[in-house]
Length: 256
Image 1 (tube, helix red, strand yellow):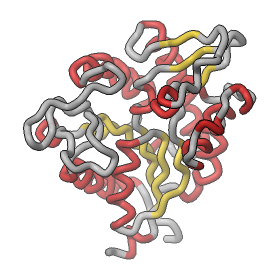
Image 2 (cartoon, rainbow, N blue to C red; image 1 turned 30 degrees about the horizontal axis):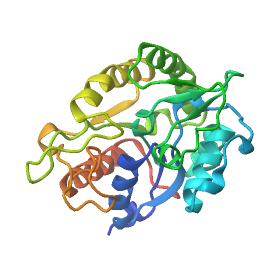
Image 3 (cartoon, rainbow, N blue to C red; image 1 turned 180 degrees about the horizontal axis):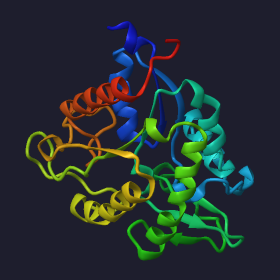
Image 4 (tube, rainbow, N blue to C red; image 1 turned 90 degrees about the vertical axis):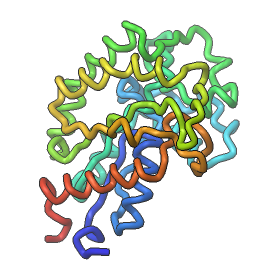
């Protein structure tokens, strides 16, 4: 382990793709700053009362916390708290895949797999689903990108942010077809996602790290089980290597 890597800090705005990549970076000596999960770009700043959802349905303290943070719309403050010591911010759009729910007052919360499993949204009267891939969801998501870019610039993170563009794997390491996620398969998800990645790159100028097709295979023994966005170990090793190169190019180690 090099002293340079030991001095670096990675923050995350995203979910499992970044999470699993960060685990590789941690073994290389990186520290973790902010971890903003289960939040859509569309839900930032919504400030929905926590009692709107019964978060006690969740056994996991982590799951309760990230859902409370989404209700609070606290992405900006969370990233700001660690911006000065963040060398690289990883952004992935996995948490966009289930869309968002718009409440009657216009506020937005992120729809999650844990929330769906727990029946968390069943009692939300008048909530309207904006589905990922729909024109309305995309157009509203795209409209948030200039604000997101300005936020990153203000925090000094714009040039230190990487967008992880990782297609859903169609097959796993054994050549078996990957399962759907809440009824959506890899081909459909990848078709939907293309214009989101294109819009993000165009509107923000953020560097995009595109996982090569030959590495886009689901892991057969992934810690979190089979899913088209749970990749083989070689994929995370490749991402971590490119993140280290990016850090060496644009970031000075903390304390240097």
